[in-house]
Length: 212
Image (tube, rainbow, N blue to C red; front, side):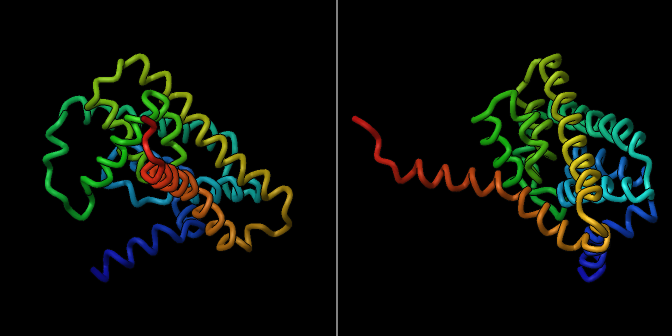
């Protein structure tokens, strides 16, 4: 458990992680978080915003970031969709483990039930849900061409929004790379807002009496 905690701490200390692994590591993390169930704990949003900041300061090449990373995001969702299509309902009967929680799958299923195909785009901006959304789409039998369309739109929108957001933030705020802790906390809080809104909406709907 101590080693696992140390690993998680290392993975979320994104600046030295990016400086060590560069573009290859950023692309690998994005693919894993979006395509493989055990990737749900990876720091996708904060990693991409930090990568954008480091691109502005010369540590990474922006052109490669906004070309390769969206491809990995799209490829990751394709893998998740195929896993869901092949495994089907058996995933809901799979026992919980360190890197797999049925609660995450059920939460994503509810999200999908509310937003339908748009989930593939919206989920990109919701941690954990973005990991399980393609598998749920596969289980639900979403039309493949529809999935691919939403997958490409969502993958490009997510990567561009986070990477370019970090890039232009670094242009506007002097020495922002020295304040990354504050930036990452802000990114994490923003990424939690959709989940908080969803919880509040369900709570409000539960308290609202049904009309006769």
